[in-house]
Amino acid sequence: MSDDPSPVTATIDFDRPGRHRGFLAVASSTNRSAYGTVTIPVTVIAGGEGPTLLLSGGIHGDEYDGPVALMNLARELEPEKVRGRVIMLPCLNLPAVVAGTRLSPIDGLNMNRAFPGRPDGSLSQVIAHYVSTVLLPLCDLHIDFHSGGRTLDYIPCITTKFTGDEARDRRSYAAIMAFGAPLALINRDLDEGGMIETLCMRQGVVNISTELGGGGRVARRNVAIACTGVLNVMRHLDMLDGEPERAEGVGRSRLMKVDDPRCYAMAPDRGIYEPLVELGDQVEPVQVLGRVHYPEHGEKEPWPVEAPTGGTLICRRPDAQVQRGDNVAVIAQDVEVEPF
Ligand SMILES: [Zn+2]
Image (cartoon, rainbow, N blue to C red; front, side):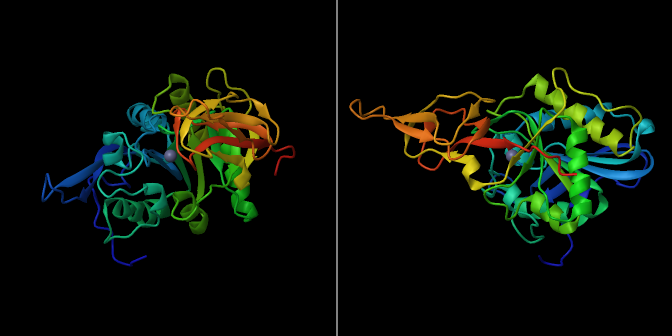
């Protein structure tokens, strides 16, 4: 990573008490605007002494539950009741959120594969670099809000990754259990390079992230889970008074893990995917999860997609059109023994 300072400027002072709303200004020279600027909304709510919590949403632009929850909290959280400071970026990848796309429409990058970023790179890399070098060093805990986006549909969950550093893993685990989503997931992604989670692991920042529903929708229940989750983590960190609560219809989090590439089932061919199991169903290894049909070949048998491993279906592709290699299902396993 270059040592050059970030070219991003913030219009608010992160150290001033009270509620301050402004934006991060990032130069973006485009066909439409030669001296253009992308302005990413940021809110700081600072009360008395206490930890700093960084909340980000919209790193992927087609995942809306978290951004809506954070936009609500940015208006509603009362600074007088907060011990410490909350920095909120509901739509970190603003151009992607406006376009409703996972990747940035400006540089085509997946922002959650662009960390730690670079100060002299493209827009996504410059924003990632600002978060890495200016915001993360300020914060004690980071919550990144994702949903499944247009191509995935999740049972709402809060996730973290373990690093082997017991003190940090213990704090991460306590934070996901405090958050209060239906599922608490200890996970591993297929490609962790460039993720903000991986950077947090390296920088020693406790990081947890959500996967709330998906399909390009906003669901009232998922927004409630996100809002309650933020307040619960703040209570857990003693930033707010009160006891942890649960969003309507949510009980104690079910602790699960996704720690094996076999948890991800892929489409074997291009066609129309017919799911044969529902979210939340228990599946056995090699059980048929669904099958790919061939609309142009009436004589051809559909190709079954077998479960690569056993467990519970926690995520599914909502779009029927699939190509070879598309993820159609994620299977998680229960964690029988609490890690701490
Ligand atoms: Zn995402």
